[in-house]
Image (cartoon, helix red, strand yellow):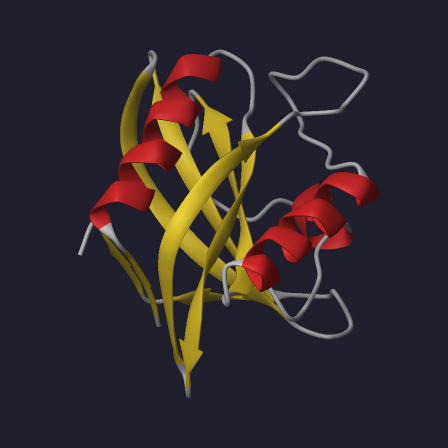
Length: 140
């Protein structure tokens, strides 16, 4: 299960809506207690994809490393990555799976006509062959 504090959730949704019709991306920081992850903070990361950003996002390795360093500086963990899907459902695509890390949660926000519609969270397996849906409790 992944719980996302209201302030962090508001940052995630605002970033996804503000980058529409392009995909956004960002980091989620927080704590892990057994099978429960709690996101306390989220922040935007620049979509570094060089092609049409409405179809894909890409994180630079140095940005991911910076996010991990920021989490440690705050005494937290890097819980995972969030990104948006403009004008389509929140699902974990083949591209998402191929570029995933099995130790992170991946929250996908569906943004329809510029407004938040719904979200889902996914946990990829170590082989990057499938991603199970994770219980998501946003804004709690």
